[in-house]
Amino acid sequence: MMENKLLSKLSQNLIEILDDDEYYDTIIEVGNDPYVKIFHAHAAILNYRSPYLRRILSTNVKKYDGTLINIKLPNILPESFQIILR
Image (cartoon, rainbow, N blue to C red; front, side, top):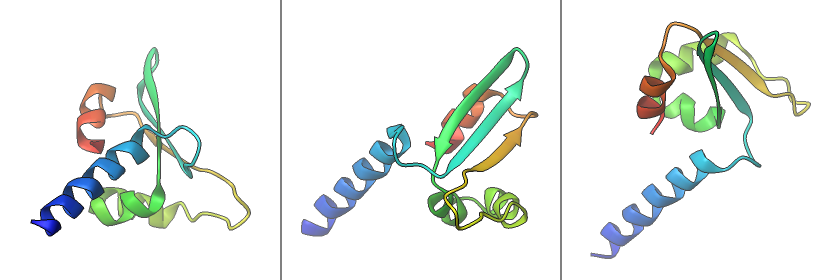
């Protein structure tokens, strides 16, 4: 029972991280003009949750100077990507 509470809290924390506009290291631009949406994310979480994004991140090596990682995904609808991200 305690394990279920811990997993539930962890899931809630991960959702909160997605909604956090202060602490992120990745900007993902999704869609084509004029239907582009910007998502803020965390490279470490993306790396472990998605083999596709892991490949993109591995080619977009982050500098250790605080520079944000920028990813463009023009061939995905923003609405679809939001579902995938969640």
